[in-house]
Length: 95
Image 1 (cartoon, helix red, strand yellow):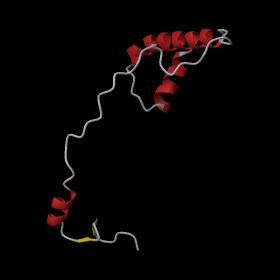
Image 2 (cartoon, rainbow, N blue to C red; image 1 turned 120 degrees about the vertical axis):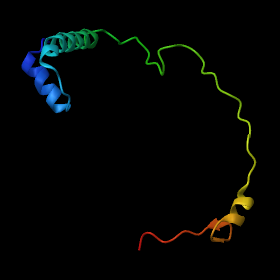
Image 3 (cartoon, one colour; image 1 turned 45 degrees about the vertical axis):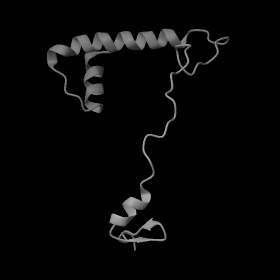
Image 4 (cartoon, one colour; image 1 turned 90 degrees about the vertical axis):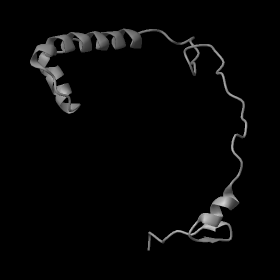
């Protein structure tokens, strides 16, 4: 699907992008080739292809879930301006 220079200018305007006049030709070529690639990909037969969650068939390395800080809630409540029944009291914002 070849794009014209006017199409690229309209796309740039909609995307609120400023394009230099000398770059319009290269953007037109690049965008047209991307749209051609998408057209080719949409024509591929993917009936027997299973969807993947990730293109790499690898396990994700996860760190062990360790507690690195202790619960300091009681200590923090002693320095809070107002607390009641284990909750911080804050000024009412919504009436």
